[in-house]
Length: 550
Image (cartoon, rainbow, N blue to C red; front, side, top):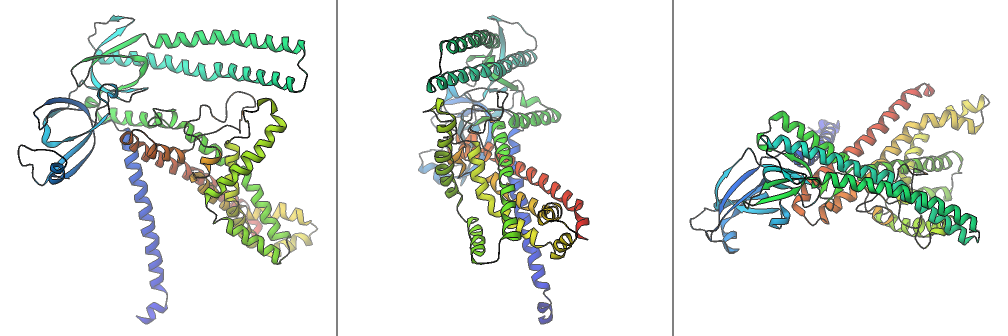
């Protein structure tokens, strides 16, 4: 036994076991997040319950089972519930999503199993996803087209066809508003700023006034035409309605321009449910959020996260590599160099919120305010760069991840034998040529390793971004079709902040809970995708420059 311990085998097994347990824990956590998040998009069965409460009042509810739990009977009795018969030690309680928020208040309710008289799964009950007020459950009865009630044999097919028409018209209206109308608004604002600059420079002559007014009149005329087209599309989308019988037994009329999709979950086959599941995930990834971020998709948050991380990588990599080259190749070994290395290492331990405070004070207020004074005085007092934006977020996270890139690059430089440098210099190359053609290519895998670590940390940071650029809902993306096309001063959405906002700031906690899991899984997927891309580049560089090591 003593020889076995001396051989080191127990420590090898202990290390392997710890790594295995860690891997299982991480994979288990990812599977849990994926299951809780992706199952949200699976079309759940819709039930109709007939209830009789303890006071003898009967009611009907329609909805989906969101959750269930066993509650001690004593706890329910102490809360005021009275049971006609002994239900036993535990009572099953169901959390049911009933929707129809504008008629029944909250769209979730708890129902005790002892109050349920019957439960059924009607084939013709439908779930309607709407632009506001959440989902609606009921029985579609008829379509009203242009004010006339249609006599239909197949209400389901007609309903879906009319919804597709309304959604297509609404999409065209939104696209018109974002692109053409948005471009004209952008040009009108630029004309206003141009006129203001002329005023500040005392150069606003009569001819320039006439020229600016002529441009403004032309844009206003184009705007009026587009506005008329926009309202025509909206009016055409609102032409039709649907009559639905809800859980109260009343007939409700809903405009089709407020409905995005309809699902008859109870008669969908397995292939239909799989197709609906993929469509739901696709919509979640590609659509904009709505209903205080508790409905819709997260595309602006995905775009903002990836754009900010890539911008941060472009900033941090050259500065980190240059700093590492100076410290390892040029700086003399002494107390100052040692102090700088200690400072770099200590920077990695500074809390991220401190970087956010620094970024707000230095980048936003000092640097951004100075840029506004020098280059954008016509826009003041409204700040351009003097307010939080994506550029300041990228710079703040670049400083936060700079120590990681410096340390990783230095490690890569230290692994290159000195004989390689000496051989290059002996053959007549200068030190700069040796660095550029020999040392940096050989150290590129280590540089990519530092970049991978930097991306992994930056993509998940939230605290500093709350101070320097991220917002709950950004009206426009940092990239659009308006010159100069890339707008680094704009605020942006971020997946990490979106998780915080939906999970802790949402007015509808139960509706937001699945989206927290889905967005968390999406954030992990984005980070893994970025890291896998960087790892592939690193492996390619390692193979490409392997010959330089021999």
